[in-house]
Length: 238
Image (tube, rainbow, N blue to C red; front, side, top):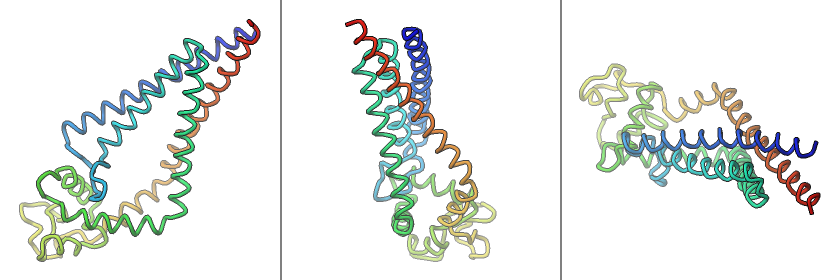
């Protein structure tokens, strides 16, 4: 009975980690594709230029692949060391995520102020050499969210040293439309607009976060259960 239970957990954990590993491969693939085709797409921070969507996906995908691989081998080989390693790695990631969420809600106001200050600083890199990612990201955000600047369209005046905004701020896009009168530009601040959009989609974000946490807890449960079963089986055989 105990042997059948161990076999059942073994294959469940193997399938679970195989899917985990395949998910990591997919995320890594998307990250590499973004890095190759879009440069440092979605790099908005001037303080952390490496914090791009491509780099985040590559790092996340690599970690998931490594953890999934360790879990797969540990399950199929019934290796106590690998099972415990998988459990510890997944637990560390889970605790780090929990810490980040707690700190985010505890220091929301300070994070808001820092983010706006850093984003305004990053505007000065718009359209400059080597900052295609930041330029593309701002163009897409301003076009899709129908907004202009971080806290106001006048943020761009300091960048250009004149009454001008990027063409992506225009109500109707045309060449050099950013040189026209303010009446032809979007007036909504991008920071608040994106923030409101996130708040409106808070349920979806919450469900995604909850599903992620449940998957990790499930992985931790599988790993520890199988580890205990393997220890029991070794003790019984001894």
